[in-house]
Amino acid sequence: MEIQTKAYGLIDVDERQKIIFPTGILGFENLKEYALLDASQQPFYWLQSLDMSEIAFVLINPLIFRPDYTPDVSAAELQEINLTADDKENSLIFTIVTIPEDQSRMTANLQGPVIINRKERIARQCISTNAKWQTQHFILDELAALKDSVC
Image (cartoon, rainbow, N blue to C red; front, side, top):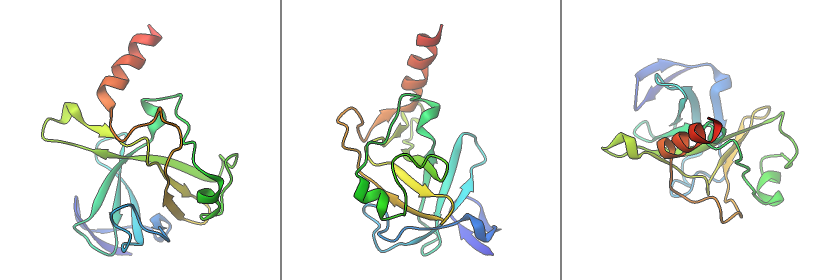
């Protein structure tokens, strides 16, 4: 299918890249259909709205910079997308990235993970109940701390 994207203009994507958010994303509850796209810069992804081409989110797998990350979300939220907490095989976990003008200060929202049921291609932005996870984790700082702890 052809879609209009914020980052790449008009592109062709596989139907399997389409993800439905039955309750939308926080602040964008009216937008339900998205496409998950590889970004030109790894390890990032684009979550492109199919309802409004101007709306797209940058995502990252939080385990890249926080290997200790667990989403700690309610069973009820997971049930909405037909998952359980121990269903690792069918779930993908991402966090939304905010990239300011000074890109070295980009942050990830670990308090509001995006969890995708990869088999059914439905998703939900959940709320972590763990106070350790905040809305702004500085990705490069976390990567530096991870590198220092490994050495």
